[in-house]
Image (tube, rainbow, N blue to C red; front, side):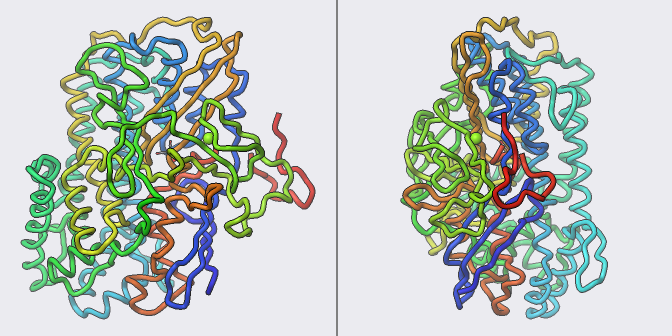
Length: 597
Ligand code: NFE
Ligand code: MG
């Protein structure tokens, strides 16, 4: 048994440590996920004017601040008792801001945070084993996906075409958010009762122009067909099976040509998703298309016990067809993407927010029990001696709490939302995998679900911008602090990485007495709970082979691609998941590492 530790896991937000046990066959047999920092946002909010929460909570993170603003605005609408009056055009504006961020975040994750792993030198060696086809593919992968400042064996590799383009598109999307939300990151628009800015006709034109530019990138690089054709045949397919058939037939057509010419270029029809879909999966690539090799991402990141995992989404985006107002507890019922708890065996259950709890048996906090966030406590251990990331799985080893839904750890994020929507392509692929002896949810389906969500949302965004938004509408309603006296509010929403909840309580002076945030990466990167059940990323690591392509070229613990692909596919954000760090790095034995007032 060898201990393989990735610390820190790079190309994610925040500081995460993954500690694994790898057996003599190169299989991960145990895993611990640790969030390495405590940030104290929940404590920062105590005794403050609740109206500040939608600004302060965004500082948790520069990647998903819009979602924190939105979850917080929802919690405040509820706290002040005015959610049923928020004007429709404010809700449309919030939808637009959120979907722009969702698309930007997914594109960044796919191209800048995850795909660079596909040009890990281990794959050069694997590709070399299949001769000219492999070498041609390797060249194409580097040409598209190499990250900035990349070297292999000391040789500088120019940044990939798709990688650089994705950064430009992200910039465009950030500008689009800033146009109607003041700035980005950390938008100024979503506030209690609506939004601060009334978009003009010119803004709508500008938003549409940003949109079409981003879609040019998606149609020209991400997909080998235009996004309308893709969505007609997948998202709007008559059945999950026909969605899968469309993708496989499309891939067959380009594969047949390319295996003769060894041409995997854009002009040969290979969109980035096509390359990923064909070569990323053993089932699709090798078994269905007859390719000589694949990355076998469908063999990594699987769950082995469906009773120990669920898929959770709170639902997101306001249903703006009905005019003004929304019900904070029913948001996920009527919105574009619905709330659901789906078991590990894919049974859909009605979502009930009262079943969400957090516990701290393996986290660096003081307190007890499995508490609903309204009763949640964030009381960190104060003594540096108690903070040991090297401990075993019986110990405390993370700053991340352990959220559970009725006691079950849940994966949150794009695949959970696609399962809740019963999105045909995702469901069809998951069925194909389970019918063929694979885990339905794996690194491959997790990544494709993210891309699919990005495409689906892009269409919906255009409708909100060009059809639903009325610049002559109303955008907020007046409120008074006294309306928040002795009250409580719940803000359920979805961030790019998954289910996001803010829970707030106030006292007789209307100031905050408790504020709890349960964040997507808190779910995904959760440590064990008091029953010893590992969190989703921990479960997904266990059973995964440590080295490239199922240890094809042997076990290399110094390049644990299995850990990197698996964990990064969840798009972890530790900045969010644990919301003071020892800035000096000098805190020693028996010293307090931070002071909290
Ligand atoms: Ni910091 Fe966040 C998202 C939220 S994450 S990125 O998405 O909420 O866990
Ligand atoms: Mg929290």
